[in-house]
Length: 86
Image: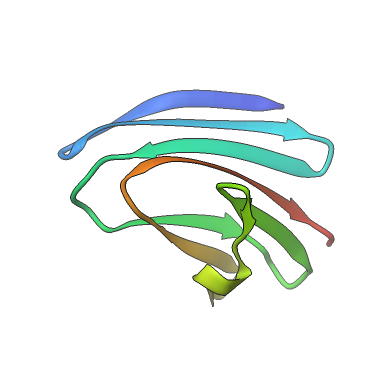
């Protein structure tokens, strides 16, 4: 699978989400409704990774929770990328 897109219906409104894969890099887009605390979780495992959100590296705005990279997202449209170096 190299792409997926859909809409999640929540009590705060619809949330459009899409992912595309180009080699080892995954690109994503999401539109977060106002109201809830929203977290994006990306699998990092024990290896190295690289991630961007809205054109900037996310390392300074994230937290590792086990094997997951967790990023808090404010309301609005967001796009980013994620890749693992193993």
